[in-house]
Image (cartoon, rainbow, N blue to C red; front, side, top):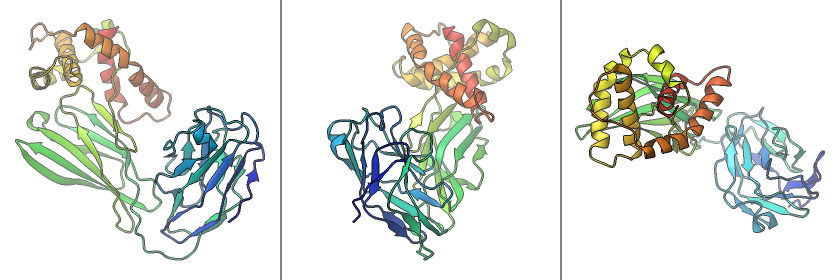
Length: 383
């Protein structure tokens, strides 16, 4: 075991593991224990956190597991147990820092592992980034490498990531996703699970390299439930854990996103000028969807609390269509004070998302058009 710690070139902190490791091709292997120790003030900060970097030019990724964090930095509350995460396609480990380290604070990390693929390479050094610029400020004294020794691939690929859907009309939707970050990723399999009148119909609808698929000819009013399962497959036939996408057939929101952990984010709406909409909006699509909106309203609102989340957005949909088309299917339909307050409280999140992913980018996200439509509807009632 090597106990020597190597200092940084631009920082005085110490960083090191207790042994070098060598992987075979297609193998997962655990590192020894790492120690990070602060030797000066303001070198390990809450502003930047701690990053452990792998060589971006080699076919090597962190294995997603839950290492043990301990030491004086944990005992003093500067690092929280279980806060470690994997970012940038499993090329980096990130450890949030809650308070700046003081001189002598130590953090031990035990249980980090690497996964190799079908390319060997010589010795490389794990790097530590303390200023969040993506560059190593110092390196581990020990090494990792991948030997040219074949190991039967028993490693399941990482799941498909960042799944979104966009409702195009009352029968079609667009699915989009990012592929598995694995180097031996081969294709994505998509399965549709549609329940109608209590009967579940399961179909594989896509298999290939693309990152989007248009599912057409589905009449939402006919379905009780609709979901999709996404599976990544690697070149050796191994399958990832499936990621499920549930479609809310009653919600206003035309688009939802799943993160790496499979949690759904539901966007709200953005800003605009209500008086301009009547002049410029094409009401023909709203007229075609009026009956659909009415059915959703009856299903989601008439048999439950009117301040329910899904009911509120269904009311927005139908009320918006009624006011802009001049057609009335539900008399005296209004948004309550509580509805408006909750809409205003959530407005900042979709506004920020639209700005970041649809305005401040060279290539806007695939869901921008539908998200903008939904944002306009919120603005119509709030502005």
